[in-house]
Length: 182
Image 1 (cartoon, rainbow, N blue to C red):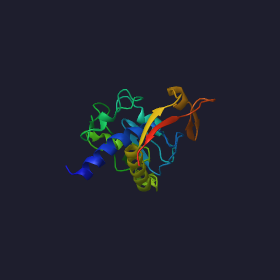
Image 2: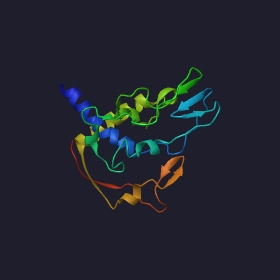
Image 3: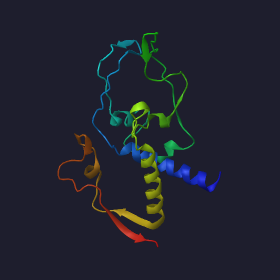
Image 4: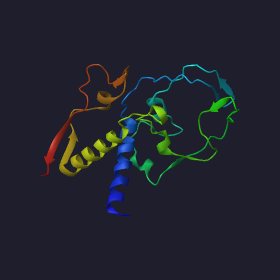
């Protein structure tokens, strides 16, 4: 493994769980499919609004056990999520199946939906990753931080105002910069 691959791997192992636990948009983002959809034994009629939130996916305990904890190790070595063992997908020519496309395991990154997925994914996703990469590398190389008067309740997602907000009166995340290298 080259130095560049090593840095990329370590960055991904830190940034993926960080993105999973920091929700850019918390509100539901509805979609209205033009075709009927098959989901397990159910047929969802065309033009039925469907929605989900990244919060629900990122805290699905079957995908991310102990989902509220920051565990970068869960992203090591391209982990897989076991394929579903029940509920056959119903498909026909007039429907489009949603959910796992195969009975095989899926990469965990499939369920990292911070920038959404598919045709509705964030246009700035690549720029966002690049900014994270550059800023994270610069900060980690140069600074030592410690939390300052910050508790989990100061940063926890309590209110949905399109973007997630902590409890009223929260001081939010505060850090003390202990040292800066030149």
